[in-house]
Length: 377
Image (tube, rainbow, N blue to C red):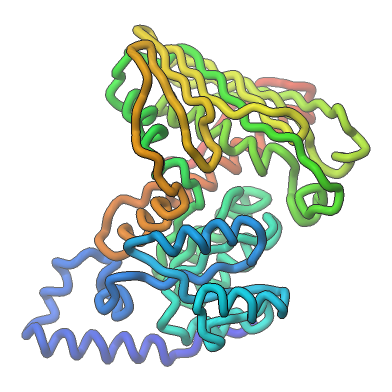
């Protein structure tokens, strides 16, 4: 693996000297957001994003990047040579901004690329997130963050060591119906939450996909879809759970022989609220229902690409339909450019993986209820 050259550091020092001369004092930089003190982010109104892994979801991200206001698609990374030409031409990405998995580290020398979005099989998330951080690029990591807690911690450490920002690809936090559910929890609009039910499931087709391979996916439905149900319970209550129990079922054991197919979970929260959750690759469920002391709220669908639909005990919720991926990438770009809040920091991905590991541990112990000791952020 190559290491980033010193040329980038030299150019930043040169730039800062020039800024200091122009402004008359280096102290003025101290009044700017931390993320704005690099040459790239000061000079640009839009940040450049490179997509790593050009599969189905990257196609959605690439299209969404045609609608973003604060970032743009400027780089591609693929392990399939034929995609270099087709994607480059389709999205007007120059050849000098297209990389493969072997020469990826050379991205450190490319000022057109500010953010690396890792959209690879789960087992590759840690490697490329860490390499991107070492290259001096900000990182968006698609969910799940990695395949275990240790890898999540290593990604966070690498980003901190290289002074780059880290965000999770949790698009729902930029979606208005979801934001309203989060507001209900924060402001206790209907009082304390009492009970949450959420499911994230679909029927998987095709036996040749990487999500069915333990080595690449790390797990099955829980890592792919279960994260949505876990997230729903957390932002519906505004709390992190303190205990969890779980059970696993398989209705197509031959198809899902390496990874989990269907999992049910029960969560306990500090307020006393309980949540029943399910996830599956052989069922259909896409909803969030919360009962509060003085009312209820429902999203159905709750976490597809839209439109999301919602209602409460007071009536139908009505928010504009947004491009969730575009909003998510713009929100992260505003965090870098303007110091706006990081809606989904790396620690959120770590927390969710800590929960996932305890889910698997509970299953291994016959559904035993286990305490959760989660990272605070």
